[in-house]
Image: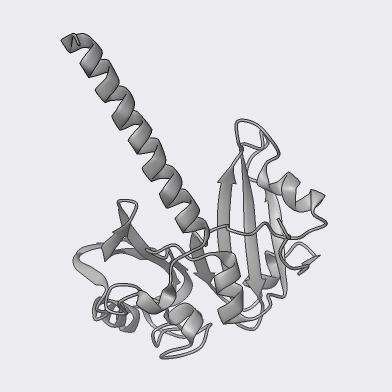
Length: 224
């Protein structure tokens, strides 16, 4: 066999291997991760466990109540935070986690109004599906779906819990073929497809979750 043909075969083999690994990770992630296996010193689950406090409180801080300096001191002391990568600016702060998800270590952001915490964004650094989250948090009060831009290049989905002042978010780019996420949900009578991953958690002031619901009542998950 010539050297050029061998290189072609090897390139094809490794390309196929990459596809197999990607597909395995994709379908594995669609089922989420076994939450019991996560190290609490590296992966934060407090937003759904209620420990040390229930939402809208998170790790002892709460939107509309907690002052800036207390918030920063509290988050810096969390074991899963990389204290060498904290970005502080006039309106907010962002943090990185010690462990990354798909190479992205950015996991917490927040903004302040008059030095009081206003909104908290959490990005889980582990795959957790909406089904897993709903099982932990209980049935949401409603949800919101809409195109992200006039060209509908992506669909926004947000599940909302009013009393918890909490919204779980997922943004899905429009696929090359087939229906986009917004169309799928509409075609399923408002039911949410299974296997979607929670991309961000928003905890904010009273009224925020209600404003994100767009009068969409919870109808459960689609069978397929």
